[in-house]
Image 1 (cartoon, rainbow, N blue to C red):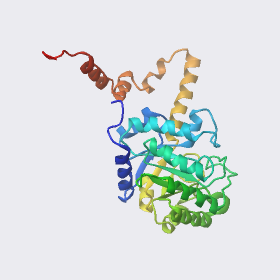
Image 2: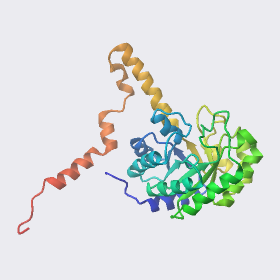
Image 3: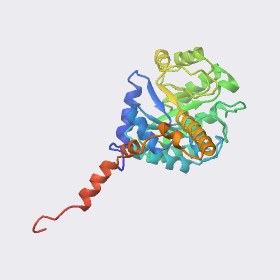
Length: 301
């Protein structure tokens, strides 16, 4: 009730332990704090906050228009309501290496378990669009090193994302990943790999935890959790799945409401009031409120 029952440091240690377990972590992207609570209740191992999702939620394209403080504010809303470790998309670090360093500390303060920084030029674009450009490898190495130096909690996970597969090829992306690990990255996010063979090649070449981005309508295949675990990946990420589901349902609902003049036919597809109240913990809040206000002082007090 009101907030998570765990501390940020405890969630960070748990995330590290999960990544070292050899099991695949399935990590959906939260649309909002309430969906983060539902992700936890459904049994997933961690929660993600996607930059593309946050941009879309604000009515903006994913081209680097959000700010570090906007992202940190949403992160704090997410971490307040879930006991799951939370990983966040920190884009390019929102500027130069010094900005990346500040971003790490903002995200630590927001209670996150980790973040990922990418090697695109700033302003960036969605990782599954054509026309991406990456900074020189040395520039990203400085970005990663600054982020690692700024980290105050050694359990806070620093992940480096490389978008080099499309503009430079798989071999260059692997070489970049190795350089980023040497600069201080704890894990790697290879973006927009083309097929299962490329996922396998990356795993064989890079000896740190790897994230597989299972975003819909993208450049790569939607591999099953079983396949990714067999390939040795540590995280299966579903960054925008819930947003796409929700927006699809909203569009259908609006069309039905406009056509029928009533939402009656939509009721079977809705979350009920009782289910929403259960998820929000109304009963616990009511009990807490009663305990605070409906009491009598003992004699002599």
